[in-house]
View 1 (cartoon, helix red, strand yellow):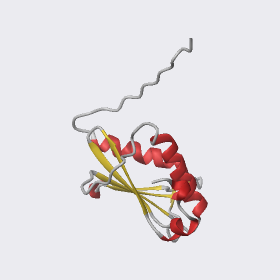
View 2 (cartoon, one colour):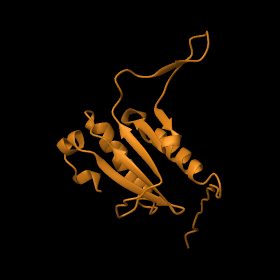
View 3 (cartoon, helix red, strand yellow):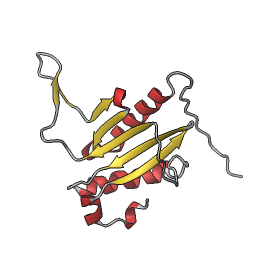
View 4 (cartoon, one colour):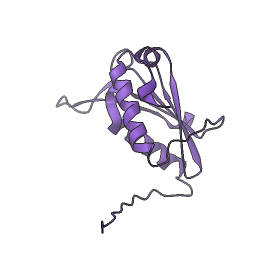
Length: 142
């Protein structure tokens, strides 16, 4: 999927589906129609730029997948949790339904919330027989 080629009308009215593949698992990401097209376009372009270069985004579609990640517009009424009597309040940007193998987030939460959700999905999928390791490298120019 190349987001730059998608029209605003298509982003507003149609869902886009992306499959991500890693460690033998497949994650299906569904990007629901959005009124605020700019949020959807920016999120999709950033995901493609970051994950597409690493080969994380699959070039094919899968009938079977291990987890769903849904991105949608804000629900009717933002969910707020009040922590204590000092009126500390927190907006919830990710809805976790681990038993259903589904996480939902909102476009306005942005790229950082997407990566938090993705990390939680990966931690769930590998909990019994795997681990996550981050490694970086640098190449010295000659």
